[in-house]
Amino acid sequence: MSDSIFDITPFIPSDEALGQSTLPDLAVELSQKSAKLSGQLTDKTADTLETYMRVINSYYSNLIEGNATRPHEIRAAQRGQYSDDPAKRDLQEESLGHMAVQAWLQQQAPSLEQIFTPAFIKQVHEQFYSNIPESLWDIKDQQGDVVGRVVPGQWRNCKVEVGAHMPPDAESLPALMDKFCETYQQNQFTGDRRLIAIMAAHHRFAWIHPFLDGNGRVGRLITDAALKAAGLDSYGVWCLSRGLANKDGDYKKTLAVADKVRHGDYDGRGQLTEKGLLSFCGYMLGTAIDQVDYISSLLSLVDFRKRVDTYIQARNDHRIVSMDKELKPVAGLILHTAFIYGELSRSQALELSGMPERSARRLLSQLKSEGLLSETSSKSPLRWEIPEHAEPWYFPELAPQV
Image 1 (tube, rainbow, N blue to C red):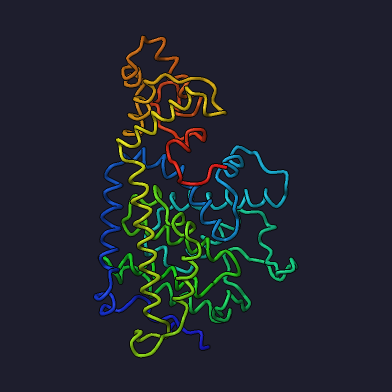
Image 2 (spheres, rainbow, N blue to C red):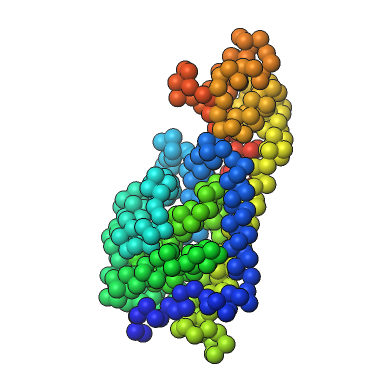
């Protein structure tokens, strides 16, 4: 193979092909639904949700790569509670490493122009590997023998095989990634084409396979950052990886279909199949819409209030084993109001309780001690939180609990 940038054309489906597809409509629908979700959340509520969702994103993105460390195991690791099994402990640390990169990306808030540069892509890879155990840097064959070692933030230096796909030779990677980034610099795309281009770039990055390992996680992290930078402000409250992992076979199948070469004169004018790329982009946009719809339904005010009340009832029926202390029903109003605004002043919380001050303060103290509300000082507002014991009731089916 020539290993040139032309080997991965088309970079985005042609205007003619897009005009005959549903992709532009899907891109508009995703933008509109993401904006609507953003509009129903205060910044503080969104920040709490985005921090919480890092565990969910980490779980699902790592699950795609075969790391099935469950959310409760990740949260245990956050508390410093690791498995006695060294291999499981390494995977817990890998999950925390993935979360650390998410936090770093949120702090960096890169623009699309920054994201699609070789230096930034290398930096994401370096951030990921610098946060996971060095034992996971080794590449092993099916017999368990070490056959290579990842160099964080560096393009691979050897040929690899990915299933039936043969990525480009290592020697061509510097020039190829330069051209990849130049091609997908987002100032070239506007409107619905911007989101379509991000999804197309996700496949083309996987096709190039620029790193010895970690391409899947890094590719999804880059796509996460790009979707946020493209104006999907609610991204982080919902995550694409959940949808991709829920039907992992479909994700890998559509990736493989888009790997194929062009099928005759009615399959575009590039080297690779345009129909396959259309299918992949449609799958990614549809999956994103499905996740926005799912999270939006969970966060609707009426439905969320019902789940808060159900959680309190479960507490009082002693159905939550880890929490044996009953909770007064009025706590539902306080917690739901804190969810709506992201935080409450102490005077607001006391007023909402409708209780004598001493009793109200005891209730607030209980809510804080149980992690349902938090504070930064004795006079700070009370912030809405998502403690582990409330997760299954607040967000059923978001992720497995055990």
